[in-house]
Image (cartoon, rainbow, N blue to C red; front, top):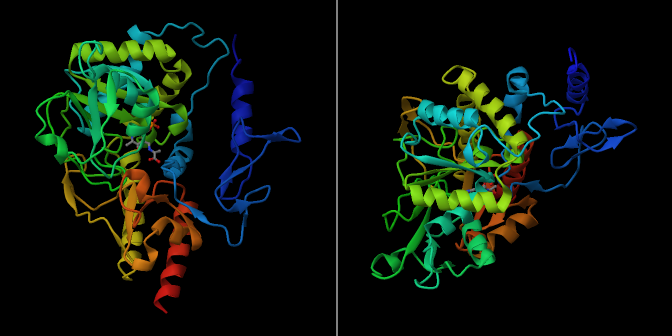
Length: 419
Ligand SMILES: C=C(NCc1c(COP(=O)(O)O)cnc(C)c1O)C(=O)O
């Protein structure tokens, strides 16, 4: 079958060549008009080629949609592309047990070793459709496995926390576990009960490095952001249960790929069974694509062209600009982050968080989300993270257009309020 890939390659190159100004792109599966994929524009940009900026359009910094890395992959087009034949891996089987690609597992372990952000050697691994699918899988795996004879596990996180932990625990509503409201300190002295604590480090929404309040073996460490673009890596994470998401590493949230590193064999077996019953593993097409992306990241590791060097430079500059603007007025304040030694970069590195955790300091702006929305900035309100409505989260990981629009609106707002 020589030359069978020529048509697929030509199709992909043609879509990539469709001009969408610097404010959009066309994909192979974009909406087709007159026989060709159409441009998908960044927020507020319109027109066939995304070249027009809509007047009075709000900056949208609500979701943690990691598109800030798109330019990196456009620059590394050749090393990150993969061409899928029509007969590629049609079987349910993968090369390893539990629907796992052996090569992808190998590369994940190489990535942790190269970055030094987690102890992976004596850990089992479970793949998930996004780390989102693993959140409830791990709660199940850490809960009592005979709910009729033991009380449900008490699941909690310290505010402000990523709301999906509670939303899933309530939604799946099992006899094995239940969500506990309240501050972690409420539980520290409680003797009874099997606790499951979520510890997000760096945390979403405030990007601070965190430790467990309870300690012990039933802590789910969510290290979704524990990578050099967002934080210093002081030492390899060494928790019994650690959750990672490729969405925030390479930016490919669309491939829905995450993994858990688990020390205890029984916990690993229960999480694996959950994934088998829930989805029979992660799409093998996604595993193939993420394998190619990981190979590309590892090939450029520590070089000028590394994804972490690119990501850090981008996020550090965004934080520098935002924090400088915010400190120029007394309307707002941001979380305090200080430079810290990073074992990956082998230097003290500046803050470069994925999110700004902004407080509206004025009494009249108590509902900070509503105030900023009225000024043309769409954010995620603090109450969603079980915090005060005086706080809002600003996503700093979207496109450069999104960040520039945010800065434009914030500058105008600060100038107006302080003139
Ligand atoms: C997209 C967003 N969060 C993703 C996320 C996830 C889910 O990521 P996945 O794309 O499902 O792997 C898990 N854990 C934390 C702490 C997260 O922040 C968000 O907060 O806007």
